[in-house]
Length: 407
Image 1 (cartoon, one colour):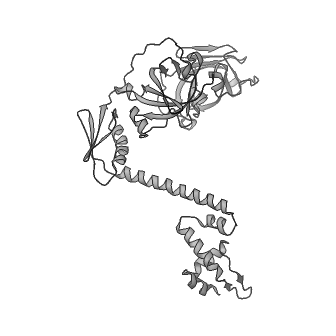
Image 2 (cartoon, one colour):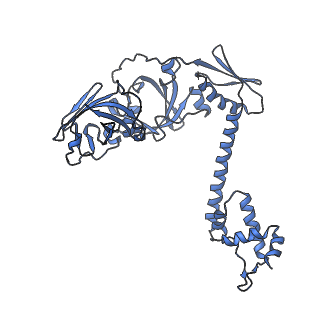
Image 3 (cartoon, helix red, strand yellow):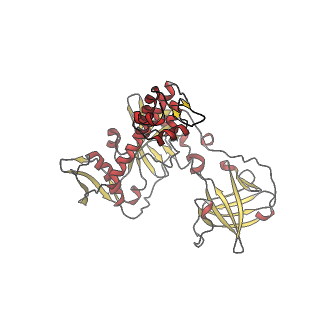
């Protein structure tokens, strides 16, 4: 049958069929080379309806072509359907989240409680999820579970105040063999009961890439963590307890972080034991090549004082005045490849600790090769150098940068 008749049989337009032909998706059975007329068979009507059904289901023409014209097998097609289902489920979750964000929450803070009006067509659990953001935005901390009534939802809260630096006594090391090894980070919860209910988990702990914490033998410190029996130190003393749930060992840490230092309560960090291996800080750290041969660089020799700290090099130059209280204070580069680094509490020098070669400061004490570059701005020499802290070496973060100016 000609293209016009075929279009009527399929309930579509001729232009659609021509587009499908161009895309090699539904090619006519025969095209007259003299007249250019396209001819289709009745069997191709089913192919068209399959294409139409897949389009309505959200598949792109390219995806449909892979299924129909490119001859994918049944397993491959099934995988494509699963991927599309997951895509829609994700979109549905995003839509639900957007709807929640646009929902006007009726919340009142009084007498140490947050009171949320229920009812308004939104599920109570969804209202609790929305309340999590509202409570934080109002500078409060939730310190109890949500109590859901017919007309309102209530939880205990505390108003956060200015930053407080709680004094911490350094505790002597006491062993606890049960905690040595690798622990998976499950997440942070406002209260421990939320973990048991599998609700309101904050998963981002020291960066998206950091999914584990390690308790090293003898309480050895790695990154910003050490420990002693009953406490995870970071560096404050965070009390922990362990609990067997099924076949797994869990740890619940009273985490004294952001909320606590502002007059709130510790949150609950939950860990799950993965193994009992006796790791060391050295084997856990990311290690750069620090055995680079010495190559001189005359432009770097001399003293440099710290000027500023950058998240990334695109922030340079900054308009702000030099920062007076930076942790990394000064570097002096000597012509023989040695150097002297002055920090807030320490001075590192000597070829076993820190040296340099062209383009790199080699911090041997923590296995990091920090690349530097020199820039001239308004007749001043600045050195921008990588700062590979524990966040970089243990947490998977990108490097930050210090800026120094020649003294």
